[in-house]
Image 1 (cartoon, rainbow, N blue to C red):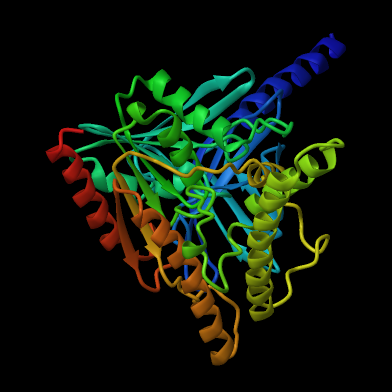
Image 2 (cartoon, rainbow, N blue to C red):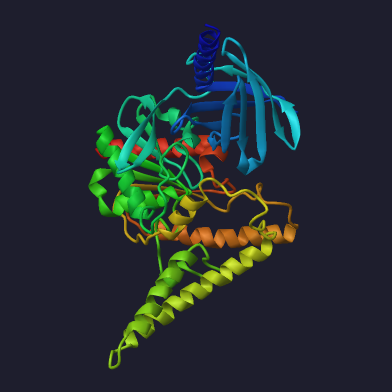
Length: 441
């Protein structure tokens, strides 16, 4: 009887603990007391097996999610860590499961108490999030911010998720229905191991098209930031009838529109083309080495010589840029970012797009703001701005040659133009969208 009683107590404890552990799943929010109060949202969900997974967003600093590296719930005590910022949290769940009282440690320790968020109290934009399968064992996080009207699809830059648009996308809901897609390798989307082709620009573009098909969207306008320019150009080049227009948010760089025209690549330009140019030269050299006896090598030699000159210009521009910046942080001195492998694969998967015959709005920060750069002398800062202006202007000129493109320049804006110059970018986008409506697109 005693053994039965002990067994029963163990069983009841096990069940109670299981329920207690599960109760951590959901959205939590609290204010970090570190000088200036900062609002923090923690979203916990069930991962594979019995494991938990989580993401954190600092609402007052950035509208994007940071993946939690490790998270565990033991006897009502929550621990999680974020390797990329070298911080950790320890807290205790209240008996009723509505609060977590704890401490955030990042160098120093600061109080951080969480409350369970409800739809009515949430600090985040109201949205619906779903997972859409785009390939075997690959699903993407898709955000639906709601709205009424023609569809808009927002695509984030490298290292970000679609949540980067949580504050910006809802500005269009009175006339449009806004969606966001987190590309493979990032956030809550699947992260397949790179295999040489599954992160190519066209593959990422195909992922977007698959989501569009699953959602049943009719000719949406795609709005992409930074590296998302390659997804826009991939779709616009191959399937122009599938979308109504493309909006590049400081996303019109060589991965989106490539040019080898010497007129578009003046001295000190471009450096931004180096990866694409290096791969082209590598292909030239392979062709030269593969040419057999008696082969007419003059076309190969001519192309190789031209591509070598392009790469030399790139390398010189990169060298000058590097001389103006402090040495990069040595590898091994900071944790590897969770999305590093995907980012590297995307970099290697860039492709050349040269002609896009679709209505286009291309917004450029030119020159870019240097506010994020470390301290540098006034002389070096002026040199850096001048070099940046030359490089960006080359891409501006390339887009201006497209008959279907409207190009807008925002001086001294941040690369995240929709955050640093929110009202201006919002107006430019709405004006462009109105043009599409008037033309019947």
